[in-house]
Image (cartoon, rainbow, N blue to C red; front, side, top):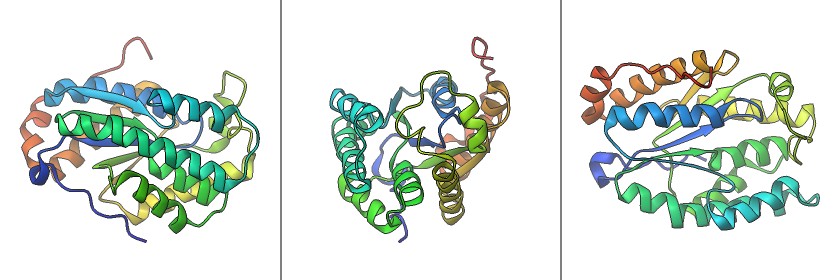
Length: 237
């Protein structure tokens, strides 16, 4: 089922909404932060960096349940993620976009589609429709997939794995394949970045790809993104 097209900034004068996606250990959390540190100054805009689940106090409680709580069925898991998403969008994301803020979220509904319909094997239509209802059809302007081999991602874990990280190799391979399939279906929204490089290399690839895509989709950003140079992460490399 096609995702509803997001309204353009010219149409509703709202901020820019970017989601960062990928399997466990792909580096998206670090890359989301670095993207914000570059893009905010480049566009002279405030940046809100958030995450799902856990971007709000209520979301932090839901995050504890889904990542560290008792085992649960796939439908219960999907509903908990949708509840977090509904509150996150209503209380944090939409108000920020209305202030013309750049919102960068570490995971959004594409994670649910990849993990619950790919990994857990619910239907993609069920999961997508649930998220569309929960968010009142709020779709990111741009979604960045940091793609890595799940075995590489697992090798990067430094803490004890959570409930999803322990789901097994087949689960994570299905999740990766679902991500790549969905990205291919919506090439105008998605950017796929090879996440196997160093933090600096992946950050540079991300900046370059985002620069080009935003210049294509949002003409009013063209000058700022043309004149602003790339930044190199320092303390994180």
